[in-house]
Amino acid sequence: MAFRNSSLTEKKAKGGLIESIKTVVYAILIALFVRTVAFEPFNIPSGSMIPTLLVGDYLFVSKYSYGYSRYSLPLGPPLFSGRVMGAEPERGDVAVFKYPRDNKTDYIKRIVGLPGDRIQMRQGLLYINGAAVKRQRVEDFTERSPFGGAMRVPQYVETLPNGRQHRILEITDDGPFDNTQEYVVPPGHYFAMGDNRDNSADSRDPSAVGFVPAENLVGRAEFLFFSTDGSAALWQFWRWPMAIRWSRLFSGVG
Image (cartoon, rainbow, N blue to C red; front, side):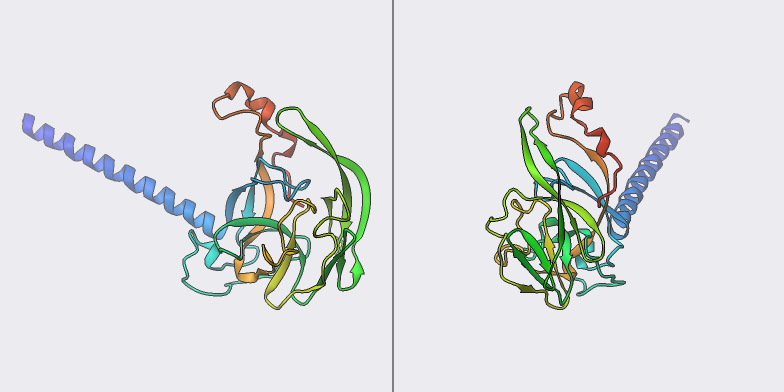
């Protein structure tokens, strides 16, 4: 009898282990499915999109907004080319895309030029198809460091031809990419720029980002779900409440 009880116990334990493994596998598959077709989380490691996005912001990107390409899948396997169920970005969208030079690194910038557009910078002003984009000076942006320092930076509201408005930083109108040639966006490509105009590697530099192929688009930035100023290390849990930027939580990306 003792032998039978032992066998039953072993069978139950084995059955419980199998069920646990199945649950974990199902959870992973569901997470991968959601990440591939719906939303994917990203964090902001650099200041190229200040003031719209700050270092330490965490956001969700909608994968379905522009349809799907090989880069919608984890690791970007070359299973197919082009886009499936594709939709074009709108001018002013903040989009995540794979860096065209390696097709691996995630970049996030604002789409300002569509296929066929003529884009140029003149004395810090953005020109689209020969017309200057309206730029209005507003209050300075105060850029704070996690250690108490602060710097005031000139801030503007830029209004794109379709009426979309967003804020940009422009320290000087005579920076390396404040006066450029006229770029003609080729078919199937987009022109992307950072909102921190003097501190952004973007489509203005052909040797860096250049034009963004439609296939490289990953998705559109939708909303922040977390933000930290970096002043608290992971183990300094008592400082977390002061490090979190509470006002940015669950705010949209515009």
